[in-house]
View 1 (spheres, helix red, strand yellow):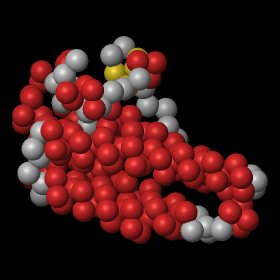
View 2: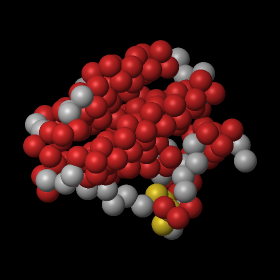
View 3: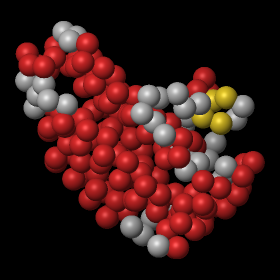
Length: 178
């Protein structure tokens, strides 16, 4: 198994026909760029954010919502660690900037979600979740897409069988057109 696969596994049960299955509410396949483990992480994070929102709206008990918030936070941290490990492994030149974006999330969005008092979670303002969804969309379309382009430049089609690199390439052409 190569080093990238060790850092960045995708559970086989979540693969369909060699591609990662995306069924997350709120996840837009247009955000995917072909690095299966990273795309999978993003879809799980979107699903967890959606689940927290649904639990708020359904008036779930604070303890139930707390578990989902902890799950969301742990998935975000796992994702950041995985992504940063891959960047370090590949000597990504913009790793410091990318990691600064992760730190910004940790310093602003994570505390906002965690600071909602447990007893008020069922009636809390969902603005912090909307902010988190917006942050993820911007981050994926910006810093993550630049990182994916770097990976494609390093490995080319060999890393993306059956033309799966095309979403990255389309985005790159759009980046250069603007």
